[in-house]
Length: 121
Image 1 (cartoon, rainbow, N blue to C red):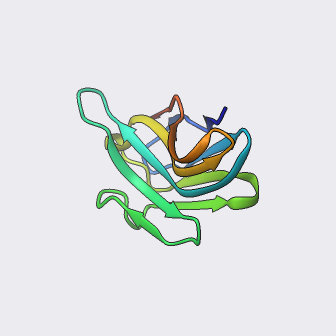
Image 2: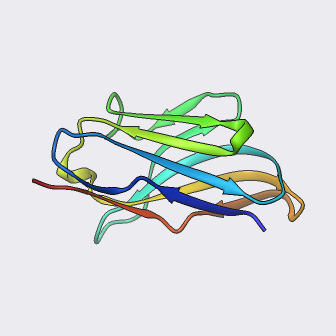
């Protein structure tokens, strides 16, 4: 069974940096798109950034020029480098893997359980 596990969250001061990681495990043959989402208290989940298998990316407007998404296809891992963090970036960050081909099937979507990022002085 495919599982996604995020790591790297924590408390950081405004202006600081954090790097999140998400590793997908299981009998995976390929993952089309990997993405990061976030959900702040009282708000809906929103897309932060996504990266396709060949490396093209998209970013949410609020994180452009501050966050960078990358992936290691050999390790089925996606990263999110977050710089110039602001209090409004405080949220639970979730990893998503879309279009997964594994022994469980093709075209499946999977989600991690999330990691909390708190930006506060």
